[in-house]
Length: 335
Image 1 (cartoon, rainbow, N blue to C red):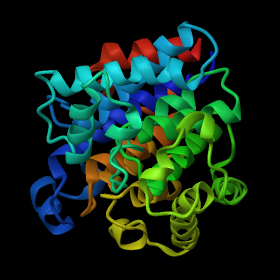
Image 2 (tube, helix red, strand yellow):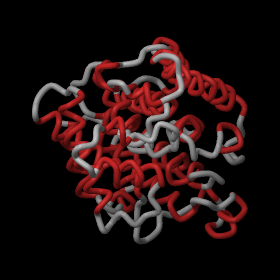
Image 3 (spheres, one colour):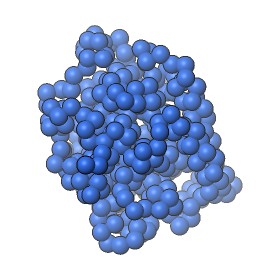
């Protein structure tokens, strides 16, 4: 029996989302007053998720459709992804405090005559793009170039800021490496090397002329801004993994997670503090003053990719909302 990293990551993502959803917008003293000691936080009886899991599933379904049609390429991914995002936008279940950037961009993507680059919110690096990117790190058979291109394209449909693109690429890369069994202890160093290698690589095939909507003098300058912000937060993360007490709010070290590079770093920090205690890692992420559902959903994706489907308590996994949809994608990609 393999560890089933795709199933583990998708269930973990949704569990983190459901655990962090009730504590989003609260500071740590308020969370402790409401939930008791953080190491004993319980999943709500009705484990509802936020737009984070909904959009992860939309991305996952779009990716599955694209891969069923043949070799993954920009146009082949953009069409089903756009349809899934617009379907989510119109869905009556889209009532979980979704982000403004996603709503604005999806309303524009709804116009079939509009190029996606003209819908993209070039000024936004909200965490909405990388909270949903895990499927691209989990789908089998992609080249490094396809994985990076797809991660950046899915971000760019809504969040066109270069830091959103780079953080989505890094998040998918981290999930992919963990699913393949790369030791968490060396992960930050590998991600740093990856960021440096790609720092000035603007992928025209996947992004087209997106960069021209910015004020940057050229595409390399545009994308380097994003990687430089990610490199800065990776430095903070490397320091935090060595020095931070697990008893303190992780947001104090790597940021509150409302923006892409901080959600990535703080979600990863919570996992790296407890690489073999996935439920403790989720609880630490959910008991944080920032965007706790997005931080915890990323923590769950990292932990589940590393430890597999058995990482999660059965009674938690059984009552997570959208369980059937999550398992369908996980089973397909683990096969």
